[in-house]
Length: 402
Ligand code: SAH
Ligand code: SF4
Image 1 (cartoon, protein in one colour):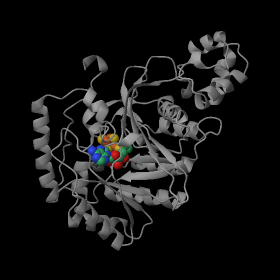
Image 2 (tube, helix red, strand yellow):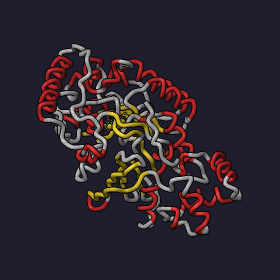
Image 3 (cartoon, rainbow, N blue to C red):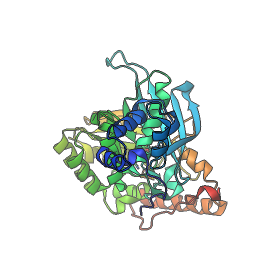
């Protein structure tokens, strides 16, 4: 599946030991590796020629070996009066990904200072194909490398540095399924949490998954302090099969059991995300099903109104309905938040900027998909499981084709 770009490695693709070895093999002293990493993480430099701690000769030597930045900013959109910045980034092989930066004011009640969160992508596109998700609609491009993930965080830090703000949190909620690219994601977490590199606390990182059961188990073992978010969306298999096609492989019971094992072994509270879709997963029986699988756990439930996406017949639940479901979950002892979607003005959920740029799929394909979704959701609501996943109508197109 991996289709690594045939280009220079990113500086951040190498761990410090490999970087030092590579730099030594160029005949350069070992401290050049530390200087290069320091410039990458702590200076405003955007390319090698702006790294003022290195002579021009060394800059050129390193530029011939490593890409200073593997995710370059192509489009920037501000929204919500500057609280949200949406970035479209271009990778070395021309693939486009998105990252969204969200700024939050200090909260005096909670005693917290100002925060800033970057939502990063782990893949270009996504193979899971959830039908309410703009990224799923794009289809799968390729896995990102560890450096391409870390460079999204560096892009956010450069923006914040100019505002005299600090990046405090990283969430893997952009394009892609992080646990289907788990090696690169775990490497990226190592870089992001290394005091000499990203210096971000593990507890300030959230990995969101659509339910890759073996990946959840590995996360518990290897990165116990990272927060796990599980995109549940429905607690009944027929409906979840439709909303999250991976459910055919790892059904609700297995996902809940893996998350519970993760919570037990790490002591970290799991977040369950439910994207609220009008008339689809917001009925009283949906709330009851959620209660029956989550009751008694320490889990936190996050209800997220669905952002509009172009090629589905669905839309967000009404605020009244969402509040009713939240009240039912709370009444059974669960902790619940209702999230207002950040970045709505800027093109809404992650994947949408890239989806727009990938072009419109043929109208007949869109119409066929909408019809299939209408039929499959009607069947799912009656408790019948659909066997065939509904294909995306807009496969990820290479830049040259757009
Ligand atoms: N693939 C991972 C992480 C990326 S998606 C996952 O699915 O968890 C991050 C979150 O955004 C998921 O909870 C996903 O269900 C949600 N999401 C996707 N499309 C959405 C939409 N149109 N409206 C609201 N939330 C959406
Ligand atoms: Fe992939 Fe997550 Fe979108 Fe599903 S919701 S298609 S898993 S990015």
